[in-house]
Image (cartoon, rainbow, N blue to C red; front, side, top):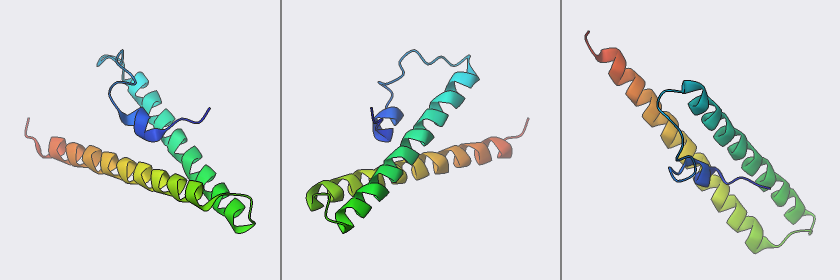
Length: 93
């Protein structure tokens, strides 16, 4: 079963995630990164299969775009997390 990182990032996937359990959030991020890695590896393999004539160009292009969008989403989530951390560090207590 292949996990789609875009679906993992949506709030509907983990409605039971509570604010009191940080380890659950960490495992959620870990799952999302593992799914992103699997997507990247599958795309790489699909491109290799295309080069040797085992794959359809249309499917490889679709998979490549999905992989690219998932990577862009992960980068934006990281950027927002870093931005939030920097904002918290600027707060005066």
